Image 1: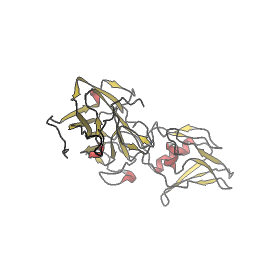
Image 2: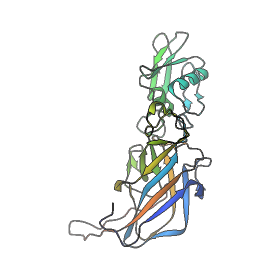
Image 3: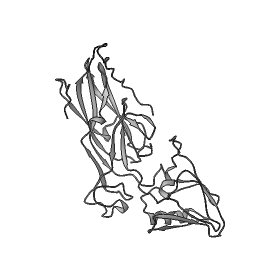
Image 4: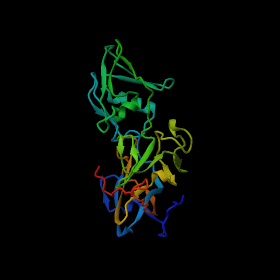
Length: 308
């Protein structure tokens, strides 16, 4: 939608391909890339530049159990261990847990969608799930939610049976967060602070013709974050005015950083998957109001490189 104070400067689109990044800030993956421009984008005096994400094409190549959530904390019966990365459904995850846990038997109920953990010796035991260190609001580590637990210590009954209090949630993430290196006024509840987000993209995943027919519990052909996403692509088109990032006047843009995150502030684990995006740049006049007439001169935020 055009702005009421558009300038005569033509809008432009910048097309990105992950293969063309000049710096990979997370080597071995393509989820945090820096793109440079040989000729910088100049912003004239008294003109602001709006940056927004117009499109994103991203293969859904991440596993629902991956480097961000595969560590299982120790219990009073077993030590800490790591689940091999992969796409699991409730039954295959139960089977893997039965291989990895030496003193606990795991079953899954399709009626309640809950896991039950049993000590074959019939003795009470307990399991503690620590808080995720990335958060300040007592969120559990990644594996806890998948198994149906939250932060805290859980104790079995007197004969060693512990049923998870919540339904298993094998959907790794519900959205893809696209972050950049320019300040913005977007509020991010994950950090309880302002963060430079270009967009929060809900996962409406389109299956490719060669992909597996079963989306798992996500259901349907084009939505849900599923636990079997091989061969699917996340498409995002269009933008909302609330997603636009303001860059100040009299400034030159020489680079853009694009970072892909999950629901839990982790870098989205997509290995070296090739993805593409288009960013739209619009120019608007910087509004100036006279002091003493009810409004003051508007000050644009400064453009900075986000160090996180």
